[in-house]
Image (cartoon, rainbow, N blue to C red; front, side, top):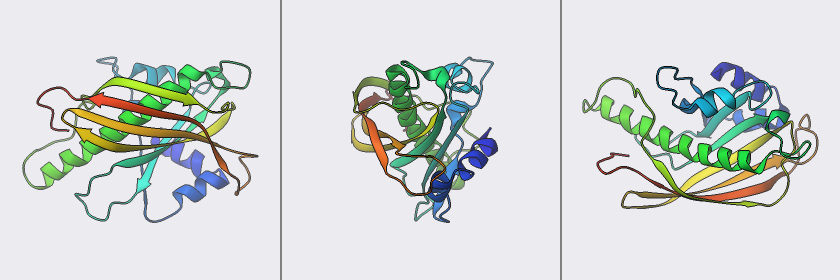
Length: 206
């Protein structure tokens, strides 16, 4: 799935340019990996990972200057199909909200993975992360600015803007390219924005 999504987005001129820089790192979202033993992430890894819903998803972000540098922002590319429609050829607003919420979770998971690998490198931990990060959505506010067309590609930009106690505040934008996807140039119009607060359980090291 990871290599398939990477190949897909590098076949589209404007998304290929986003991924082409040697300073860019890509990652396959942990939530897109099926977990049949627990049923975790079944919505994202199953229902929304079909040829008629969201067949392709890829994270990319600037390569950190230092191995232990924290990543506080990521970008997520998604191919959305008409199986996610609300109105004809328009992405359902609930799916838009789900995508924003999930992209924020992808950032938290990436931070958790990097923190764990740093501990492994210093001898304070061992093994791979076996489960997703424990963080729960406390609030999510979404503002819809313009319709998102399907089928199409969307670009979600997420960043952490504040940490306070066990709370993590994040913001996101959902953009879609104006014009034909086959064209290299063109404006990426912001179609929706989101703001959320996540809460980690007491004792969490995230």
